[in-house]
Length: 83
Image (tube, rainbow, N blue to C red; front, side, top):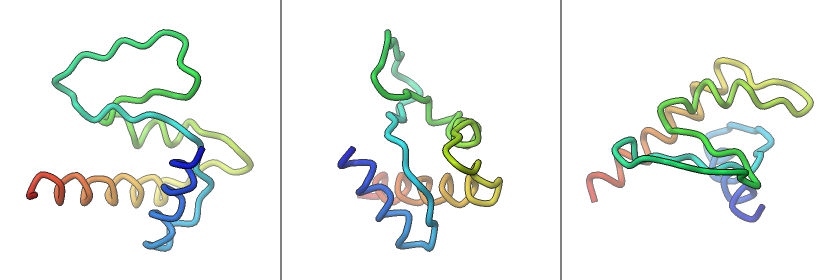
């Protein structure tokens, strides 16, 4: 839950004001993932935009919000690759 709050603040820095549900995003597409009965949602990174559209709490995320969130993560990943 603490990480969900931190992520909410990370998104707010770019004026993306959304409620953050806790989830694990598996970003390494080359490594297999096997999960049984997770306590939080587990998503593959290449399905992130679609999975964000499946969350429902109050209002669904708009297509524009899903794209903004995905782009923000892509920029973060690219900056980490450069380091």
